[in-house]
Image 1 (cartoon, rainbow, N blue to C red):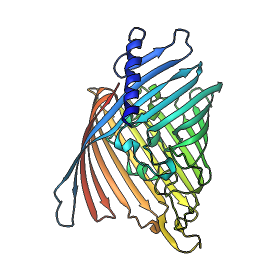
Image 2 (image 1 turned 90 degrees about the vertical axis):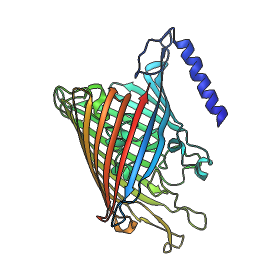
Image 3 (image 1 turned 90 degrees about the horizontal axis):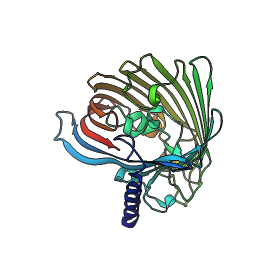
Image 4 (image 1 turned 60 degrees about the horizontal axis):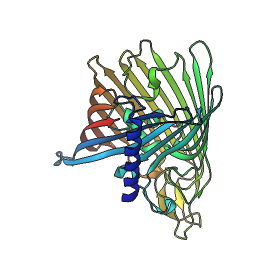
Length: 400
């Protein structure tokens, strides 16, 4: 592991040293921006990391208990992107280094750290058409597809953590269509392995099918702002995106499709069941105000895993249910922002998981947009209306 990390750092240093005379860049636009003299390829290298402080108070029914404190490097990543051979053939490679980034070793990925987040080629083979191949995010809920470096609050919502479909290995077909002067429609289709990222010993179940359609009635957002939180560009006219996603994971073998425990029986076989996840979301921005709303629902044909006899429960249960997430913020001209979020999650009774509501208030200072910022938020969470928790988080993002 140390040798691989040392090699990666060495490559970065070498690349940086020879690119200094060729490339002209600035903070927030990549540590390295290099283009070959014959324009046959380009590369941008942009490392980033996030540091967090977390304090949490649980309510025991009479009073709040003594707080728990935690300091973590939430994310630490190396991102490479550019084009190769032709500007119509783009690529992206993103590697994770923090504990949270690489955790999840199991027998299906040879018990190794999961370093690779993205490794994908994107080919613009015809006008308005792109073919993607490799490992990357599926076209799921908008909150998940927004980069973790471009979030409005310290981290994503409970809806996302419970129901998102994350990354997978496969192919995607993407297309966009003009329906009027400004009205834009985007369609995204995906066929993938169905077990999440970095799986080497598969496919254990069936394949995963994802379809998403997006409507932008007032035209595109500035700087792809529909997939970046906060209205940093202060849209001069109202901008809206409406999105709908359908995901079908055939013969899924994990409790959340792409993640969770493999549902392994005592005889060594794996329980399989079809899982369906749907999302509906909206993004709106105008003159410093931003809003995001999401609804998610997951169902399974047979959520309770059983032994080979089809009767005896194994103890594994598919996490089925639904959630609603509403989030809004206002960016002042001083680049301070106040934001708020409400999330409610309701699981099916068969899961045995209690419903929860969460209220979050956040305060941000953007120094160089999302590339250098300080964030804080405080959340009040109630579990089934009884068990309460207050969590305060403070952190910063640093992105070359």
